[in-house]
Length: 319
Image 1 (spheres, rainbow, N blue to C red):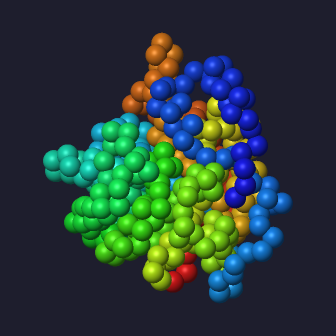
Image 2 (image 1 turned 90 degrees about the vertical axis):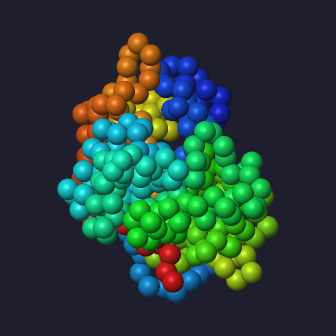
Image 3 (image 1 turned 135 degrees about the vertical axis):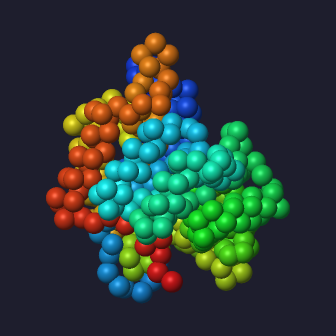
C-alpha cells in the first residue's frame, strides 16, 4: 500500500533524539512503510465478489509470550475484552502456553479466543532473532506444523495467519504456508517488505476480496495466500516525534484514510508501546504507562465515534 514517506536518514536522526530500548529500535527498522496515499494504489485492481466493505480497523498485537511484559499484555487483553473489541494476537508459539498450569497469559488469551474476540496469528514458532527468509522450505513447513499442532492442542483450532518476525519472509515461506495442513491462508506483513520480497507465486499487487482491498494474493498450485499488509504502527510514529494527542491524531487519520480507500486498516501494537520506560536505561519495565495506554483507548473511542467498526484479520478474506 505505498512507499515510506520519511527517509531512512530522517528516521536515524529521530532515533538519535528519542530514547528507545534496543528492542524498539530493532523493531522499528523491520516495520514497514508509513502511510499510503490513495493515489499510490494501483489503477487496476483484481476483484473478488462484491459483498460490502468492512469499514473497520484491525488491531494486531505482536510479540506475545508467556513471560514477556506480562502486565502490559494483560492490560491490553483486558481492555479489548471489556470493550468487546476483536484483537489479532501474534504469539511466538514455542514460548506460549508452557508455564504450569499454562500460565496467566495463556489463560487470558484462551478466554478471549473462546469468547470469539481474539484470533491467533503465528508470529514465528521460536524466538531468538531467526527470521524466515533465513530458513529453508522444509524447516518452515515443520515450524508451521509444530505451531498449529500446539495451538490446536491449547486452543482447539489452528491459526490461518502468519505474521513473519521482523516482516521477513521468502518464496519458500509462501510455499510452506500453502502446503501446511491445513493451509495458512493469510500473511500479515509490512507493505514495503511485501513489495521487495521476491515471490514468484504472487499474482498481483492488489486484490479486492469484496470486504476490502488486500496487498495481492499468491497462488501455489491452486492454494491462495492473501497478503494483508500494514503500514500503521504506534512505535514508528513515536520515533518520528509523535506523542500524546499528536500520536493519537496521526494513527486515527491514517486509519481513516486507509479504511476509506481499502475498506479496512491494520494498526500494529507491541507491548513495548504501552510500558513504563526506565529513564536510566531506556528499557521497558513490566508496568503499564497510563498516559501511553490512554492513547490506545482514545484512538479506539475516536474511530468508533467516526462510525467505523472493528474486525479480525480473517474477516477481510471471504471464502
